[in-house]
Amino acid sequence: VLVLGNAGTGKSHLLASSVANAIRRNQPAILVLGEQFLASEVPLIQLCRILGWEEGIESLLGALNAAASVRAKPAIIAVDALNDSGERKFWKSHLLQAAAQITQYRNLRIMVSCRSDFAPFVLPKLLAEGADPEWSSIEHQGFGEDVFQAVATYFKGYKVTCDHFPPVLEEFRNPLFLKTFCEAYANGRVPPGPLSFDQILKKRVKKCQELIRESTDCPE
Image 1: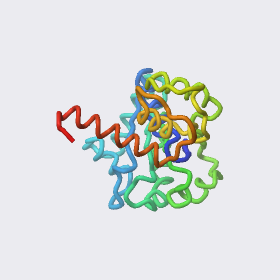
Image 2: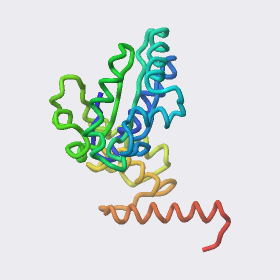
Image 3: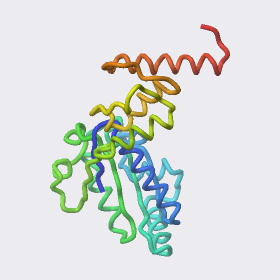
Image 4: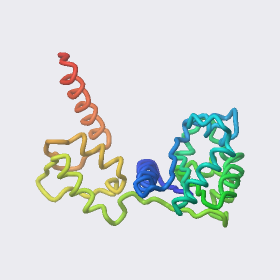
């Protein structure tokens, strides 16, 4: 499975939740980060090193396959944010081979994520174009049509108030943006009128400065 989406839409959260839910179901699952992979070795050798598995890749895949077979549930190997790898073209050359090696075991599945705008530079051509029949693709839309509920929930959780129903900007469909906005105005009131991205970030930085000052008992 390939998960695509713009920055901040929740791809990492989706993979992390999928793995966490699998583990709660007693289903074998692993999550690693694209930034942990270097261009010097093939991905599965690096996977063993990242996990501290010293018996080799066939042993690792075999163990996962056996555990999945016993539980009658497929094991998941998830790699988040392929675009964060130091050498982005690395996955163009190695992803399909790694996936084929994993899926030759009947009880193993692979899940990866990548930013949509990086897909042409990071992924093999067919996969980037959604034309590889061996892969299923998901385009993560952030909150999508649930943006009203998301805004209300976030505002309530962060105790953000305003003089009208929480403003629904197109940007609020992006979970990372909504979280940043709420952190900036937590326990406070949103000022009336339009707000620029620069204003929101400056407010967020000021909040961070206040938290650091309070936690370190350091004057300005």
